[in-house]
Image (cartoon, rainbow, N blue to C red; front, side, top):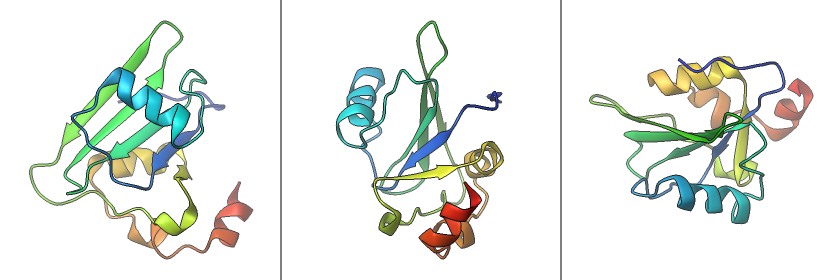
Length: 119
């Protein structure tokens, strides 16, 4: 499992992404589409349209790291597009998402105002 330092943030793209993309294309997607710096050390999560595959991209200080997972049963949680291009989550939420846990209450029904209070 990925370990996080306290300053590491996790951002998940709310729009489905073609996961045939790899390092360079996901790097460009972070920079150009979701307007985040991929070299910041934060983790960027991408989920495909069918929600059975996920990729995490981050800079570890020496290079880009890409972690991929395909669920054999079930689907990853749908992210609420009404919250913008990305959803920020905690390391614990990322771990649950990566395991395939259902986080619908957090991502679909949580009002944006409530999420801002958590920050």
